Image (cartoon, rainbow, N blue to C red; front, top):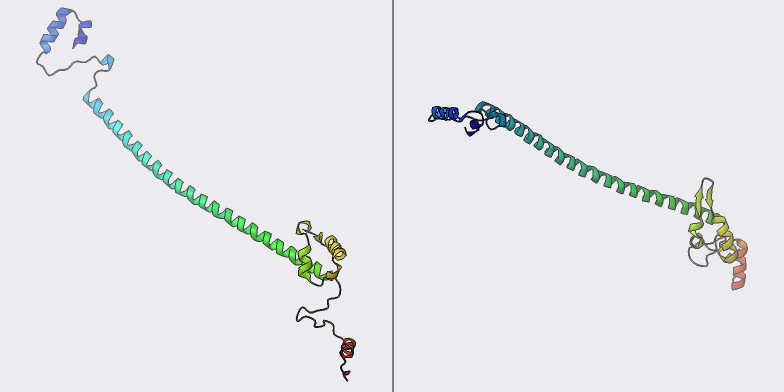
Length: 189
């Protein structure tokens, strides 16, 4: 009630103060926002509680959405990793296939070159110089020519079948007769 002293004379203030003493009345200067009616306070409180409850509900929804998004992200990352591994495996299989295909084609060329032992001649080839192209295999013939020059004993007529040593591959009647003659055996007749 002190704020009334500014607006009332001292005599009027004393009379008002005397009249209101003992009465269940409270005065406030509303211009400074010091007083809010109970109904307004309750209404504002209810609005604030409603907004708070809405906020909490939205917060819980957002937290659940975040958990779901994290789970989805982890699942997607695991799938991406699996796909990367699968792609790497596929690439390795493709490279292995290409390598085996190239080896097979190179061995075919080596075999046609008249090599006595295809595996030995194949092992002498520098694989880094061999390339598969649309037209076949490049880099093999040049190397074969070099090997034929340097190690000619690896090429020519094959004298064995690869079975037991010394068994003639192309046995003919002439060979048989010569062998019998050298060994002092009678001619077959």
